[in-house]
Amino acid sequence: MFRFAHPQLLWLLAVIPPMVIFYIFTRIKRKKLLKQYGNPEMIRMLMPGVAPTKLKLKFYLQLLALSFLILALAGPQFGSKLQTIKKNGVEVMICLDISNSMLAKDIAPNRLEKSKQILGRLVDQMKDDKVGLIVFAGDAFTQLPITNDYVSAKMFLSSINPKMVSSQGTAIGDAISLAIRSFTPNEASEKAIIVITDGENHEGNAPEAAKNALSKGIKVNVIGVGSTQGSPVPDDSGRANSFRKDKSGNVVVTKLNEEMAQEIAAAGEGVYVRADNSNAAQKAIIDAVNNMNKTELESRVYSDYDEKYQVFLLVSFLILLINIFILDRKNSVLSRIKFFEK
Image (cartoon, rainbow, N blue to C red; front, side, top):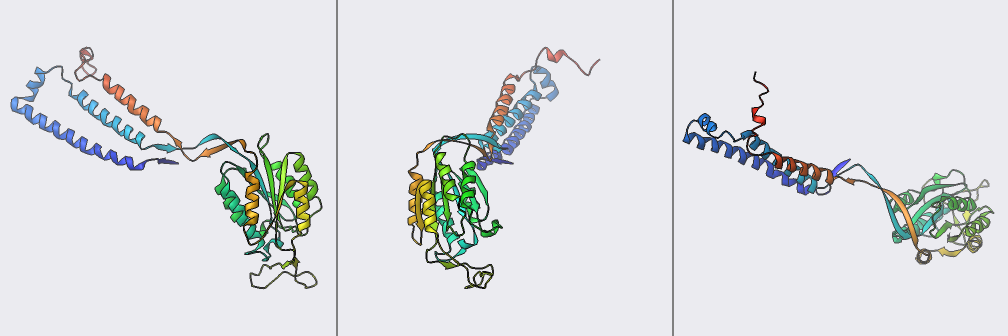
């Protein structure tokens, strides 16, 4: 990988060809003028100290030094480097329910898409914080490790769908336990877990997992998604008003288990908020994160390109240094050495 930070400056190299042409033109003109004074061979004998080859060499060295200087100004960049960045922030692990019940449309456009919208706006509000993403249904797994790469966070968030987890259910406890293990080890920053779920078909260990998180200094916030009245779950056909049915042929209806969601938030001493078609849940959860104490976070990140202008600048300097020590006249000592004469 190679590029120039300021490629427009490379146009300065266009001055090199005219300089070469002008130099050649002046050399030709100089020879013509010498012929007017007499035989060039005789004139050369009258100027034994002049070294035409050295004059040529000095000119081309100067051109080469100028070329490398222009390349240095253009900012050559290549490779990559690992940087350590320190910022003040918090760490947040998001646990997102992606079970089939999250496709219910009792909240527009549906529970899952609304959850992704809330989380997307939460990520947009982050500056120096770290965020990670866990998805769960019957099982829980890490979709995005804790990071401050918000572009990746939003990219992973947009690609989430219920097909990512084959086993159905709502393993909130497993998701919280996984989130506890997913924070940066030995980091002293304040940490929080945000669970977004409808609580449908949940397992019974979620409040205990929230208490375990609290014992480690991690608060558990919960966003309940959906209505308590219930809504049918769309099937995979993609057709409007086509819903999932149980073994008896009845349409599957899902309801928000708000009591359970509140119990988890209480056990984790976090906030509980119910998502609806307004922005109230989004504001509440952003306020909860903003009210956390910011501490110094250390991140090791790879920059795409590493600045290498110093190399070109050094080469230009060395060429100019060599040019200084090359004299215009012949060296009397070296001129006595005849390599090709007996």
